[in-house]
Image 1 (tube, rainbow, N blue to C red):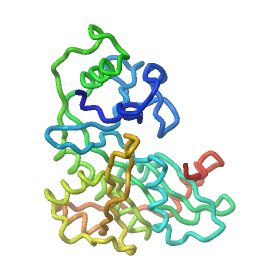
Image 2 (image 1 turned 180 degrees about the vertical axis):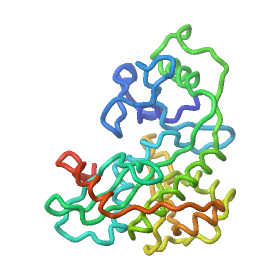
Image 3 (image 1 turned 90 degrees about the horizontal axis):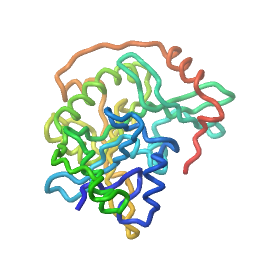
Image 4 (image 1 turned 90 degrees about the vertical axis):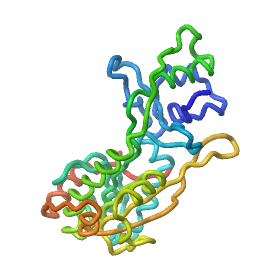
Length: 282
């Protein structure tokens, strides 16, 4: 049995026109073609969102975009817009560069085209080692999308890069949180509960606020993945932690500085907000 739990956002246990889904290669969360493509064949999207690994029966997310299901993660960050006022518009702006790197999304509160408040939102799921492609092809064989002799017969497998994924994202957060804290703004890391559990065990998380403290600049939102009665999978907020720049430094033992003016980020956001970025819950 295939270890692929979701392909192009759909669970194998649900009724789908798989021939059409594979042909369209569409990501239902972005509303466009899946950007995860084969290195050897850029015209083919891999489409793997969620998998099973090892003896762990629970699904593991391997695509960050999977986290934006129903846009619930943005709703769950609304309380971090502490300067938001009734009547302001909400926008979701993607890929904005700040000192320390690029931020996946900004949830922006604006009035009359002017930014009044914002929250940075980073997405992180587990990175894999090896290749998921053979498992994908075996699933297509089970779904009768490919013939047996067309399915990938490779015995190559994949693994979960727990340590590198956790350390890399914490280092990135340490670089970026200093900017947000300097501006008295919030940054939220959105991840799966399993990855946050791993980070809590492998790094020093004992000093983090649990439940989260609204006054902290750095927030961790962890989501669980559960199978529904109709065999689809759904995300739900499981836990929230928070800390500040010093707290992230305690986790990693790193030191760095990143100062930036509020005007820089506001200018970048105002250049991007438009009717197309308006936040409309799905």
